[in-house]
Amino acid sequence: MKLRMQAGRLLTGATAAIAVIAATGAGTASAATQDPVKVTIYAAGTLARPFTEMAREFEKSHPDIVINPQFGGSVKMVKQVTVLKQEADIVAVADYTVIPRYMFGDNGAQAYADWYAGFVGNAITFIYTPKSRFAKDITADNWYDVLSRPGVEIGRSNPDTDPSGYQTLQMLNLAAMHYHRPGLANAILENAPETNIRDTETDLISALQLGQIDYLAIYRSDALQHHFEYLKLPAAIDLSDPQYSTDYAKSVVHTKNGALSAKPIVYALTIPLNAPHREAAIEFVKFILGPEGRKISAGNGFKTLFPAYVVHGDRMPAQLSALTQPWKGQ
Image (tube, rainbow, N blue to C red):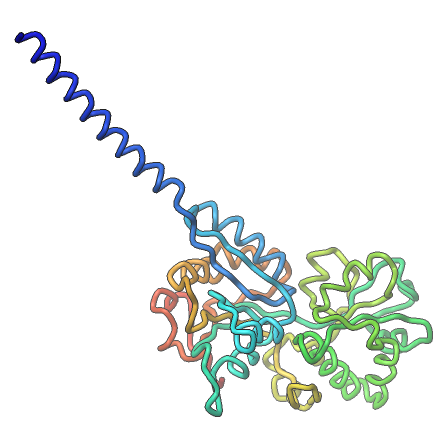
């Protein structure tokens, strides 16, 4: 009888132990299979390569976060949030003025952001290949004459949807003043018709590589990333140098979004007020602004800004304050 009772107690204890192990295992499996947080980013097309590279590196040290970037014209990307009401965790644009213009909620409109940080700079230029028409002739001294020759095909982005589109027009206006050539912009634009326009200039890179167009108005960073030939334009016209801000402002172009005066090219980012994954977004912004992100940006042809310049820093997440400085005059 005692043996049967002892055996019963042993069996009951073993069953309980198995139950505990099973429960513990189930909890571990549940934790292991928990879905990672997905951070959605709407960003300028020219940020595709560095942000994709940053995402890969960031995810190595943050296995619980997945970066989901989408790229396109900056104005178009912002309007995904403000007009189409799509939620984003981070917005990054190729012209810092796009964020306050469309996201700050002026004139009673709904606000989608209340701060932004400028983190890299760039320059506007034209890229080409050895197959491009007159590639052997073009120089930094005669480029505007070559680009206006009959038969030359030039690609550019839409000035109504993409900063590089209107920055190209601003640069051509500045070039006309710089070289004292009043008809320069119109002569070049005759070779860049609407059929050669896309929402973002990066959509035309394959057309350039295939010889369907000869030259493409784009950022210097893309030239360096893709190893294209490019025009080394003077800082007085390529929108790369803040010391020329007053001169740049003399160039004004008209788009469907209003009159736009030229400014130095500074890319900016923000975390929207309705970001669904705010804490994870902060972590990725810290990576972008930090040493690893800056190294990747520099390696992709951008001029890094450190500390990043912030507007309304008192409204920015406190975790980012050590990586930023006030953007005076904005």
